[in-house]
Image: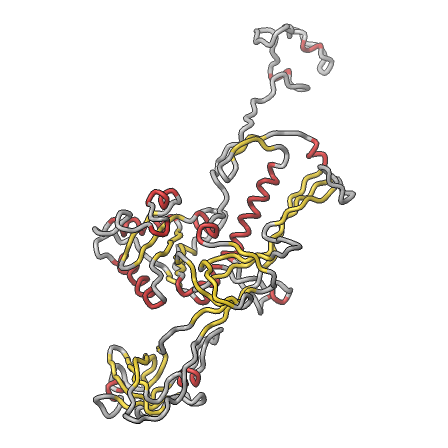
Length: 488
């Protein structure tokens, strides 16, 4: 059929219009006819496809901690010291008869002691245990520390000197000798005890950081109405207009609030500190500084009495030393969680059916609904769950260096310097800046000249987000961080 000149419409004389929306053999446009218009628009799905499911990674701190306001630039708290006196870094030298020498803590950190301070904690008259590589000698202290000396003199029971320690292991000075006080012995009518031992406590502090973000859209895009049906990260659904991206900016910022509390580091010497950004101590940094770090755990051996369960027992032995919090929660990446499942499956008397769910009001259903499964080993209850933050390929899952963290359940008693009294706090909690004039837990405000706001001449809308907060990790010695240091 002859065609008219292109662009005049005459080339469409083969098309016969119809009074109804119906498909006929002579009322359609071919692909060649669509140079200037589109008769049939593309089929558009209005519902957004959730290709990544729930993308938010927040919720960890809400599950294990709390949030409380503060009005200062710094939060300070004190933690109790050990009740008994013990040291693991003493030395004994053959030429220095019956002398036990103390050494300085290295590296020197908050709460560390030098050698003279350690020796001063031991009085003449104390009875002590001296141990080196399985050899044990019990002795009475004849000369204690005076605050300047780094040695004490002892009189062994059942021996003239410390030759049992001198002769143990290899020749030469014996370092790494362990000492602890188990009591005292005095004669009838003895005089006063040399000195008292004051209770030792350690003071810790942290400072909040300010987090900010912004969502921007121009006035023209605001005027272009468009709807998208979405399912939010909280599980609710509905339609969103042009501020769909603002919604995602907000939940991303809420993730940043939690991720910062986990990953933040405190800096006093680096380039960031020189520029005035001193950071804050996050969860991982606190555990690495004053908690327990277990490198390259391997729980994957599935034979009964396997090396996997023995590695887990090493963790229990360390928890015994640190205060024995009975109930603990394990937040793990997928691989480590599956390794523990296989390890437990190889043990006859352990598994999800062999524990109490006391931390979840003794309800197994509640624990499972929260994603936890429990097991008991020794005198400890453990509640295990996967931690999305460690699995997501856009957060810590991209590095794979952190395998999980053990968090004690319950609360700790600490002395609050501001309140001037002992208080109960979760071991892990967030402090945010707030006062009667301003609450900086999570602020958002709108500026610009769009949407009823007339605060600037610029044709745009700015949605601003701000928070000021820090994390308090109290009793960090009860936390365990699982790291991967070997190659992949």
